[in-house]
Image 1 (spheres, rainbow, N blue to C red):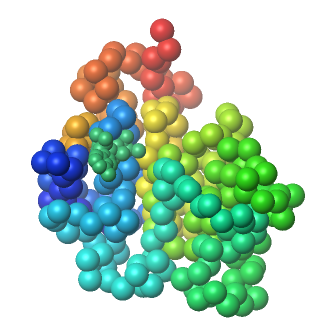
Image 2 (tube, protein in one colour):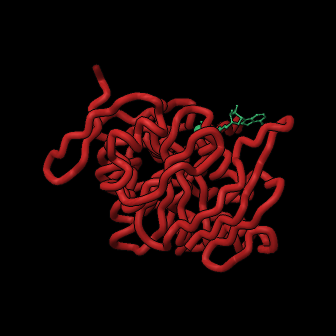
Length: 252
Ligand code: ADP
Ligand code: MG
């Protein structure tokens, strides 16, 4: 479980994450939705300690992130950032190998290497393993970064817009993989996602943010409602039920 208590982060006097208190259950898939600038990435960065919070506490599986050594935290939680800027000229296999660093300390064992190869296989990167990152398409690069996060083999995965740059086929594959990580391996996966319909079909819990606040939290059936989504996005999104899933129609 992730416990978030009274977490606040401000920039120049404006709270972009404003006294959020909630819990994210262990196991399953939790999606964070909300308009641009709502504070989703900031919240994820605070949970993963990429950013220092102004006040509040976060614990992950009982570890207070403010008191846990980085090495221990890195064995229980991995994060994919929304933007990744690695300037080094790296091959895919080496990038994915970075994910093993908390375990290998830079000296990968046979087991570490097996994790690296397995993560690349899960993201269908076998044929690209020896390519340099700057020789990949945006979507291929996104898959390489996700493989790096998977190679870390943590119980908790925080993924900020994992579908960035992915086409429809790879988006569906990514969401299925996320579901399998939760269902088959018992991982807790928290994603930031813009497509409310993927959130609806693949998550157990949805958190909706707006202007730094957590405005709604619940299962898809509770969040995928015209009045709730109006509250979050300021537009009317018609909801249709298709194959037991609630789908928002907002194209016209
Ligand atoms: P989201 O991921 O929901 O689109 P972010 O968490 O990235 O939103 O940003 C929330 C708000 O905080 C935005 O208004 C953004 O402009 C602001 N913000 C983010 N990072 C900084 C920063 N380093 N300095 C100042 N403002 C920032
Ligand atoms: Mg963001």
